[in-house]
Image (cartoon, rainbow, N blue to C red; front, side, top):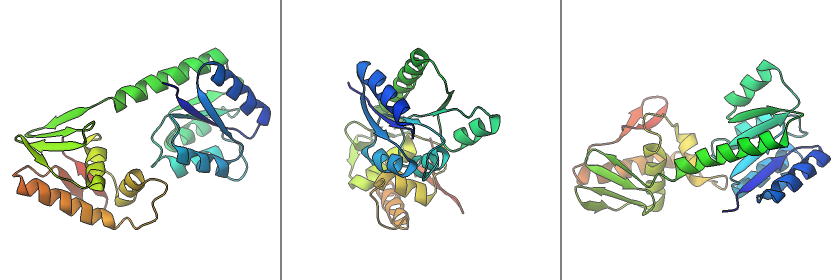
Length: 223
């Protein structure tokens, strides 16, 4: 499999060097030279993003915050800023790793490979069992006591998001962003109706309700 990497760096020479190096290593690489272009190119859903902090338009921290609820791939910051506050802010924004310039290309390659392996393992989960309910992610099916439950596409996408992250609370806006993606142009109030439909289907099948409302915050899956 040829992984797709987005390199976001306003230093053209650095971006070109990274593109050349990574393409020789077998990756498909696209580049963005400012923050707004990085957000736009992230719509293509790359497998990993290398993100500089100091960029015009939007800095890397702003870019990470703007895309993190939608883009779930690993994000590695590459930056000359080595202060502790910068690192903390980067991780708080949703970054997965932080590499200070100048850096070793061999180390960068090793870290990229490690993050892609970890991300692939998490995506390779095909089926999870919750009491008398089974969620089959590859088949996009939910069964209870041997009976297949019927869900609309978005309903299953919500079940998938919540059940893969049991105990984690998602507010309506985050669910909408994750399920509808960057192209979503509706209102996150539709989430309540989808949750109601999912719960009704569970109830009709005699299943335990697995989606708990966390009042004033959002919803979580009960594992």
